Length: 185
Image (cartoon, rainbow, N blue to C red; front, top):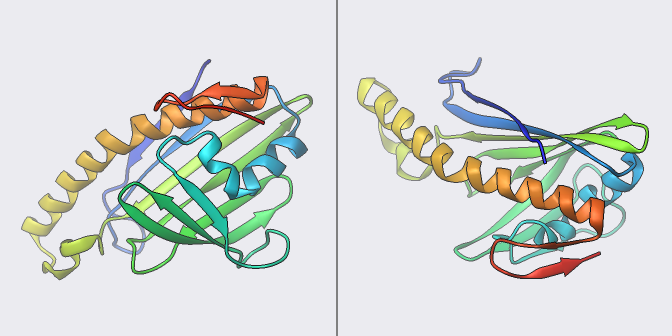
């Protein structure tokens, strides 16, 4: 399994916010329509992401812009909304307040019987927990930079492992997750 990791720490984006993010890219031996169908149903996330306990679709109808999902993890409950969808090539979600601003999603590229999947993850640290109450300046910039490094050090490797589990699951129909659970589709 070969993963291409493109990591970046922007410092400040165009809007002056502190954004940390990364992209992961991999080829999956599965047609783009099937890959998109699986990924756009976010209730499948616990099948390849060991840290996600459950995902429930909260809105009726097919997945579209505005669809809301509830995601349970061991230490939190998040709601996120689909903010962009272009079948079968793109789906993006945004975590809803009061959680920090996080957007993530997938871009898919048709490669015949394979699909190149790019996973994008961006967290705005500016309003992250207590950091939003600290005035702008060198101290806050240092704190944001430090927090960014800590989040990256913990989050990026876990996401990379989960992304690898997604590849195995879509290519073989089964996978053993990091917590020992065996799942199949």
